[in-house]
Length: 122
Image (cartoon, rainbow, N blue to C red; front, side, top):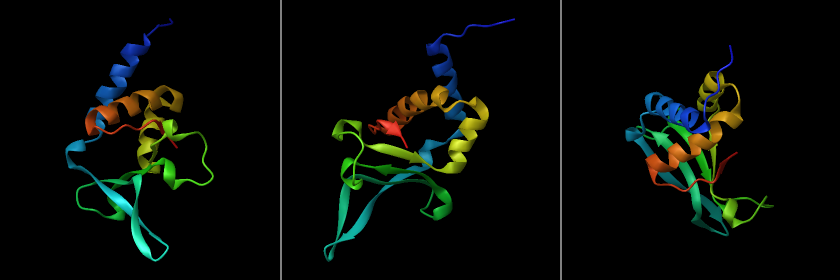
């Protein structure tokens, strides 16, 4: 038997799954500083999302703004991009198999929950 599920229904299902999988109340953001020309500087829209207190084990994702990449693929309208940590991407790929299925609802969910404006995943 074959079932047809509307895209909006599957997107809502994925967002509910994400709500249960990730507790974003403990998610924080820190800007990444780079040492450039003798001084530390922040690059716009670049940093790390992490859970709880900052440690390498608690990093959820890296956020990259347009100024971070050289050479760049795309224009400023294609940024910021989010690089989800491998283990978290693995949870989603294991559950939904096809990244094309969960990527768009994940970005919408993440932006709704964090107030960010992520355009795509790396």
